[in-house]
Image 1 (cartoon, rainbow, N blue to C red):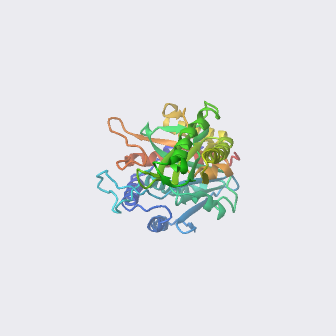
Image 2 (image 1 turned 90 degrees about the vertical axis):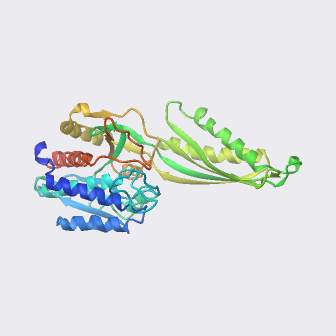
Image 3 (image 1 turned 180 degrees about the horizontal axis):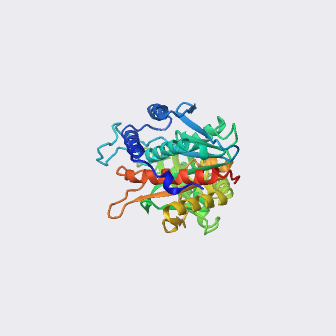
Length: 397
């Protein structure tokens, strides 16, 4: 059995990881534009003498093959992209790319995975099986995880299970939050284009008001949540953008509504899609208009597998103490494309708390979001321990 003290990070490595994190934060890149980030990760790995492979334009993965023979093939994913946000943290290593910021902790995720790779490579003599460490581009965009899956990231050889973490400002610093079942929701988007018939506002009976049709659709959408869904199952339908009309005395001939739907089960996700389309078409028809609904499937819900989650929870409890590992009660209605991996192989996605006592913690995607670098070794030790303590014994989950 691996000794917990044995995997504690030496100061030299810790200093290097802090340097890495601050460099990544200083030079963020948007989804699918992470060329400099990809090169930087590769350079760090080369400096450590660790071989790696590039996948797609800006993705990287490292396979660490245990020297104790056959065993499970476990994947770990870290996302590497940033957001189109103007940073307001005043950190000494704040973003130098105007309007681009690591406001979701991906610089931390990437650094933690690099530290994990360093540790696992050092201790590969204790490993059986294989660990595939994936630096994924484009998490903040659509289709990135699916693209890596299409390119074969879960094959050659087949990955048996996946792990991922997300820094979380809603838990105390250094604590872990686990959730059985859905931990995040799916997120799909829709555009409803409404076609009416323009006219003079003094003669509305000779026109078909697209604004009226749009307002009726907006007012009716909540009924899909309150009257057609299980009241104890989380579900969100949100219209966030409306465009239409040209003047106060003109009946609008066209209106466009844009929004998102979020669900935690596959059945509800599909049902809401069908009902939203049918509802919109029915209302438009009643008023003599037409609609075209463009519905785009986005990120699936992240559904945590019970046995992988239990394994992670046990390992985290050994390192941090069971009092610092909590089971989350609520599913976040935010989304993460890690759900695409969780659809393919048993997986778990957990939260790592970053809220420090006495300091205001800003939410994800906030221009003042930040975290203390001292959380990095915590994440590294959790990943390293759960891998070593399971793979070194050759456990087939």
